[in-house]
Every structure is written in structure tokens, then in C-alpha cells.
Length: 288
Image 1 (cartoon, rainbow, N blue to C red):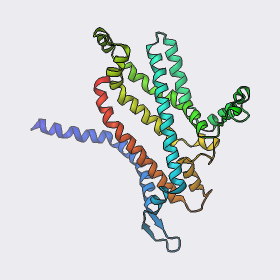
Image 2 (cartoon, rainbow, N blue to C red):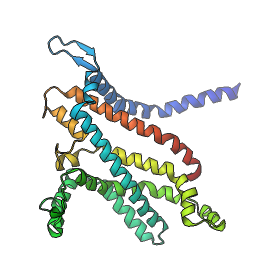
Image 3 (spheres, helix red, strand yellow):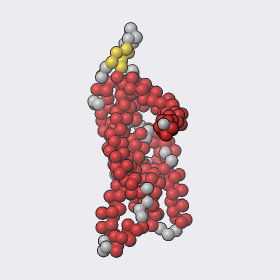
């Protein structure tokens, strides 16, 4: 009847409303992803121009220096994301529990600025501060202590500079979602602050914290300009290796291997997201 026709019209209208978004996503994400996949699994004969399917590029992307760079990026991203998650949560908790609105505003504003400060300017700022001839390095005689900005450790410090503020921005709304009644109920039942966080706070926040970790991991995993300006190729990172392959700095004709490396990055990011999404749906019942 009329009710059935109305129900059939609503889904059609919903699809029409989402059509511009679907077209935008298809053009801006689908086409580049399709071109990347095509280049990663095909090979063109320069003499005849014939194109054939091959797994050679994917195999090479998982061998030798390419595999080392992929592993290095995963290690650096996981380490910096884990440290930034812990430190960012502690800072965010201090801001949320503070009674000073000015402090909260100042911290969130500074976090918004620092989280978007990266690339070559960030590398130059650290070189001028903690480089070989940097101000802090010379004043603190850090080179005698074995400090080296142009290393894995140096990159870790630089990445934390913008990842910690990003985590603060991400986790403050989740901490605001913890209801005061839960803490009061735990206190009335004799629970200590540690017990509240162990049995109530952290289990509820766990998906949000994991989501923040995933975001930080992705930001560090895809970072290129800062590392390129600071360490060049001295620290094996997959983004630097992709740039070298595309520009032919090492070997000529490695563009398809660069596309295969990019596909490897997408697969890794997809696996991380596959762990996060189910937990995020579970936490939404409590925080929203």
C-alpha cells in the first residue's frame, strides 16, 4: 500500500543524497587506488608495449632494502604512536580534571597548532635546536652523551613533537565522556582510584585509545617530508624508499616497485583499521 511505497522511496532518496559523496570518493580515492593496484601487478614490455600481469613488483617490495624500509617504518610508527598515546592521555587527563578553563583552552589551542606543525620547517627547527651545532646540543654538551638527531632516536623525538598534541586533541572528548556518576558509584562501593581506572575507566576508553593509537600510527607511517629533510636515506623508511624509486635516485625504472610499496602500506593500514573498527562500535554505546 501507501506505506510500502513510502518505505521504498526513502532508501532511494537516501542514496541520491549520498551520491555526491560517493562520486567524490570514487574520483579522489578510487581512481588513484585503482591506478596504484594496476601498476603494482602489471609489467609493460618497453619493446613491444605489451602489458602482462606479474607478481614481480610485489615480491621485490618484500625483499632486501625494501623490506628493511617497510619494517623500519612500522617500528618507528608503532613506537612513537605507543609513547604518544600514553603521554597524550596523561596530559589530556590533567586538562580535563583541571578547574581552570584558561588552562584547557591554552593546551588545546597549542595542541592544535603543534599537531599541524611538520615537514621541512619542523626539521629545520630541530636542526637549529638539537642538531650537531644546535643551541641545546651545545649548551648541554649532548654530543658527548651520544646524542644524534640524525638517527632513529632523533626521528622518534621529532615525531613525538606532533604526535603527542594530536593525541591530546583526540582523547579529550573521550575523557569528557566518562560520566561522573561512574566515579561516584565506584567510590561509594569502596573502590580506589586505581580500581576505578582498571575496571571501569580504561575498559570503556580502550577502543578510543586504540583509535587514537591507530591515528597516530597512520600519521607517523605516512610522514615523509620531515624525515626526508632530516635523515635522507640514513634511516630506512618506506616513504623515503618510495621517493627514491620514483625519482630513480638508486635504480632507474623502479616506478612499479614504488607502487607495490605503496600497496603494502595500504594493506598494513587496512589491517590496523580492521582491529580498531569493531572495538570502536562497542565503545560507542558507553561514551555517546
